[in-house]
Length: 293
Image (tube, rainbow, N blue to C red; front, top):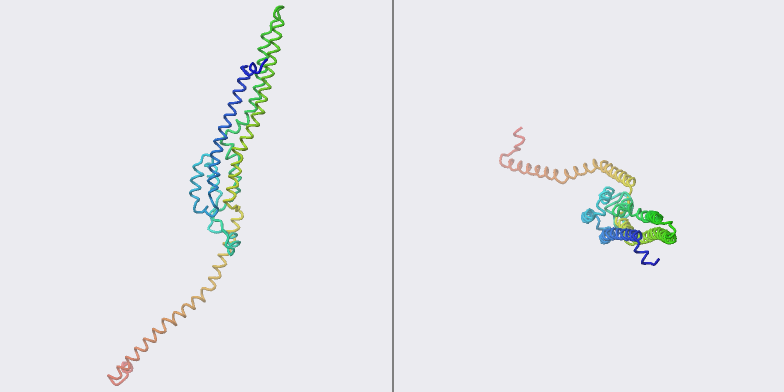
């Protein structure tokens, strides 16, 4: 039994063809996944945390247009908040001159962008996990099939017994090789699949997670509500102080208005009346006002 004889055996050819088909399938799926995830990673690399507020529409269009991230991105946006300024941020860096984030994430990015959402749901992961089992299962199937064929070919007649036994032994050997090839291809497939997955898929999904962690500061919903309460208390305190000082400020404003506008105006009227009175006195010889009354 030579190598050529073994490899041209129909059962082994079928097992080999299925093995190659599985390898080509995962290679195509992983290459496509790598291409899409790499484009996402490259785009996120070009973003800066300080630019998120005014480049968010650009980020939204890109993530929504990528088939690998569109669905996950819609869920991710629901976890974002866009406060003008949070209390903790404004108090901690108000005087330090550091950057104050304008977009916050309420849930860790790994909850949305993970293996399940970025890879498994795009590569038919369940079928890939079944492939080694299918290869292994082909071994016993073809083994018993070859053995059954070998036993049916046995001839116990006096002249053909020796040749029949030789054929039976050769058939059993080939049947055993079917199992050997099936198990060997299964182990080889798992080894190749893990290498391809780590290099083409897992590498980039981890990098994408890091980029989202870099771009978005996490603020939990509880912390955000607490910040709003603190900010509300500060605004209430400022309003109360303003209301307390309002009467005094109003009185000062009225006094100032009277002193600067009304008093000079009244003085001008009195001065004019006095001048008029003097003129009338000269013309009539008496106080015109006294004569009227």
